[in-house]
Image (cartoon, rainbow, N blue to C red; front, side):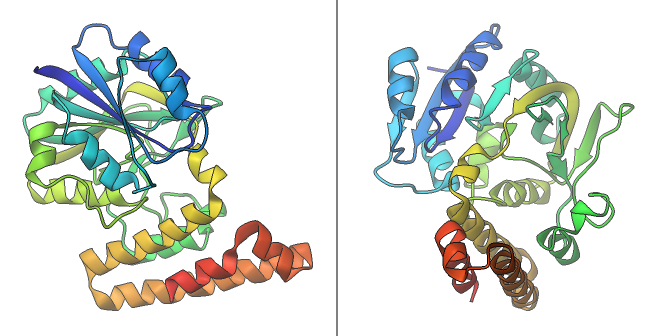
Amino acid sequence: MNLDISVIIVTFNSENDIYNCLKSVYDQTKDLTFEIIIVDNASSDNTNHIVEKYFPEVKLIINNSNIGYSKSNNKAVSVSNGEYLFFLNPDCILINNCIEKLLVEYKIEPRTGIIGPKLLNTDGSLQLSAGFIPKLSTTIFELWRLDIFLPKNLFGYRYVPNNTVIKKEVGWVTGACFLIKKSLFEAINGFDENFFMYLEDVDLCQRINNMKKKIFFTTNTSVIHHKAQSSKRNRFVAKQASYQSKIYFYEKNNGLSKKYILKLFIIISAYLELLYLIILYHSSDRVDRIFMQRKVIKCTV
C-alpha cells in the first residue's frame, strides 16, 4: 500500500507525552494518506499501553532493550510504506497543518533533501533547532557552556532565524522533527547506527549535503517541542551518549587529531563539573548518587 507519509516516532518511557503527540498528528493531518509507526525502546511505564488502548491503528514495534535512536528509526523505516518520512519526537505537538505545509515546501525546490519546521518551546518562545555543520571550536564553545554568556550564533553553530526569512538553507535541522523522501533516506543507508543518541541528525544532514541535496529550515509552519523530556528523566544516559556521539562524530568526519583534542576538553569539562558539584553539595558521595558523574568521565577515557 502506497501512502504519502510515514510518521515515525521512537519512544522510551514517554507516557506523559505520547497521547498528545499522536492526537496532534491525527488532528493536524487531514488531506494526506499516512501511517504512524512507533518503535518503543523497552519502556517500563505505560507508553505502550496508551498507544494500544487509544490508537490501535498505530503500528507499534516493541524492542526488548533500548537499542538507541538511530537503530530504532532505521527499523521503523524498514517496514514503512510512505513516499516521504516524517520523523517526530514523542514530546512534540503538531500545529498549523505542519506535515502538509512541509511537504508543499519540500516539493518547491527539486534539490531539497531535508526540511524542518520552526520549533517552539512549551511557553511559545523560539527553540533554536537548525544550524551549520559544527567545527571543533563551536563544539567546545557549547561544551563549556559559553553560550550562556555569549550569543549562541557568535561562536556556536545554531541558526537564529529572523522575521524576514521564511525559508533558509542550513547545514542541519534537528532530528526532533523533519521531513525527507524515503528513497533518499534509503540511498544513504539511513541513520548511522554508531550514534546511540545525539548528532545523528547532523551526520545525516551532512551526508545529504554531500549528495548535492539541500537542507532547509522554514518558519512557514511550527511544532511545539517540550524539549528533551526523556533525556531529563535519564540524565546520566543522556550525558554519556552526548559525549560519545561528539567523539565519534569528530573521529568520523574530522580525523583522529581533532577527536583526541575534543576528548581532552570533554574530560577537563567533566572534572570541572564534578568539582563544582562537590563544592555545591559538600559531598562527593552525594554527587555520585545523583549524577554518576565519575562514570561519565570514565566513559570518555
